[in-house]
Image 1 (cartoon, rainbow, N blue to C red):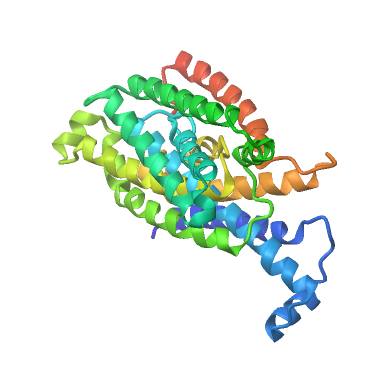
Image 2: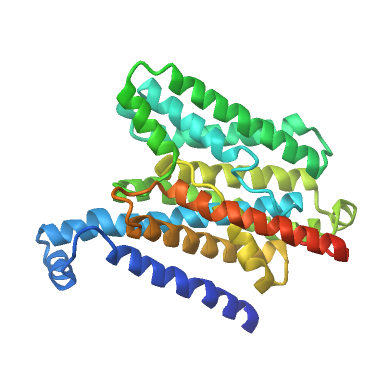
Length: 337
């Protein structure tokens, strides 16, 4: 590992560790740390020990896992499509995963089989990714893929809204609506056990494709000359994204803009190489998600904001900044990826 890469990883890992500790500390009730840790080590199920193990720790772990999944998937999508606006939310992967999860909710599968939720979310993400590449066609341009992604995103959102509108139970309607806005509140270690294997499995094909992503950044003709098959890379990236994002959405709901912002935050530190961005973007995504989750608990709003609302409030100005940057770089004739 080169010194510059070690420095970059340290730059990302330090904020993640610090924010995870802050996430464990922050909460509506004070937590006597000495008592909690002592009771955990002694096996005593006291209130402080339960708060730490059942509420604070799972929330911090999920923030890191979900953010890492979204950050890495966003970096992979941006590298594959060679477009800085590509990310799972824009391309419809997150919306399809959410639609699959909503089907599991309304069909009652969640009550019959606890694993139905992540399976349905992953299947939804897989079908959405497959539809993206099939609809765009072989040899589709980046613009075509983005247009098809927006269409799939709209269709999945409309199908979800249609299902909600037909819901005979208003309580189930509100429950799913709040879930769709994204949150890490009231999650347990069981949710961590659901998300972590899915994200880890999804990370494997994404990381295996990192050198091929570097080759694709040189253009498809150059990549083919190097023995890289773009369609095969797209399939592996699609599979990894579906697994990682599906597992994340299954436990947190839809959290937008993390997959868009994280790669941009880290790309200047890794020499703008798509392959080198993956792991660093996972760390940046974890840090962004943890920071946003801490913010929703600290805001004096009376009740806790949904995490997806906070990331949208951060992401919208970020898109405006990208538009200004693109205009400036376009005038100078330089690339902004």
